Structure formats: C-alpha cells, structure tokens
Image (cartoon, rainbow, N blue to C red; front, side):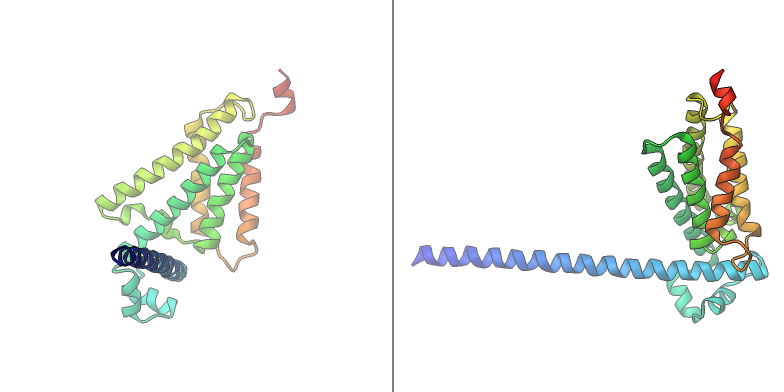
Length: 231
C-alpha cells in the first residue's frame, strides 16, 4: 500500500513537472510573439518619424508631429518611446546591430573580398532606405546624451573595423588595389550614410536599385584589373 502511494506520488510530481514545463514553453512563445509585435510597432513608428524628419527637419520635429504621422495618440506613442532621444537611440542601436550582423555573416563566409564588401554595402543601404524608410535619425549621433552616444560610437567603431578588415584582406590577396584601408572605409561609409540625407521613397529609384548601383560603383573602383593581377 505504501509502495503504491509512493508510485502515485512520483507520478503526480512528474505530471506536475510536465505541466509546468509546458506552461513555461507557452509563456515563452507568447513572450516572443509580444516582443515581435512590439518591435514591428517600433519600426512602424520609426518610419513615420523619418517622414516627419524629412518634412520638418530633425530638430524642429516634436513627439506630437511623430504621433500624428504615425496615426497614434500621443499616449500610445509614449508607451513605446518616452522621448525623441529614446526613439533616436533605438534607431541607431537597432541599425548598428543589424549592420554588425550583416558584416559578421559576410566576413565568416568563403566568398572573395569583393563579394563580401558588396554584401555589406547592399545590406546597409537596404536597411537604411527600405526598412527604416531613409531615416536620417541614423546619423544624428551628436543629439544623444553622452552616456548613450558612447554606446553608439562603440558599435559604430566595431562596424567600421569590420568593413576595414574586408578591404584590407582584399588588398592583401590582390582582389583590391593596394590602398589605405582606413581611408577607403571612411569614404565608402560616408557615401552610404549620406544617402539618408537625399533619398526619397517616392523618387525614381527603389532602395534595392540604389543599393545595387552603389555596390557596383564602390566595389568596381577597388578591383585590381586583369593586367595588374598578371604583374
């Protein structure tokens, strides 16, 4: 009798543990879905903010302007972003995380340096011009308070080093001409970042077209010619 009670007790514990595990997994999935919905809403707000910044300029745009452009009440906007500074930090932090991921994937692959550089260039421009709708907030680093600005500059420097390594590796294996990799990297990133100042979503070129054209021009200028390669 005692043995049967022990068996039932153990069985009950196992069943309870399974239920807790199942409930924990369900809660985790719900949490992931909620995070995904929140991120989608934040990105939609960011695209609305980009439209407001283009129309009024970054400094002159207030939270009411952003809420109006996003078709949200001011209270709903404050639920996602407490201030324009918080929105600005989110834009830059999210952008750099995505760009670092693209650079990391490009540098770990077997492709030649020119293909890796093309991948990074196109990924950055598609992010800036398509996903973020040309948000110039990606560039407004100096508008952040010092503590937040340091975090962004640290990530930006990591991204710059990743791009510089692709160019330096290409010069070493003679895919690219010999060059000052740091200077070339800054020239390329300057050209890419400036697109946020002039690009208009309603213009004649789609983001993918701009990305492909920039990759063509910028990579082609670094390639070693067949004659130089034979020397």
